Length: 90
Image: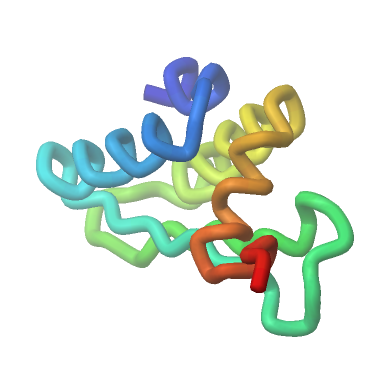
């Protein structure tokens, strides 16, 4: 699972993985831009919700794998930010 998260190709793939993790493993993720602004990948908040049986290492490894994917393919981060209309043209 972590390898797959490290090699995401698009935001659509990320959303699919997010859904599958919730359905199959009960792992819920929240991925949102920091309300104070996004200047780098640190400004994207990836939260793995508490769940019985999910260790601290796994809760840290999942966001790290997603951010690694975003670092390799910045388009994913741009698409994520654009979901809220950040880059919308008026």
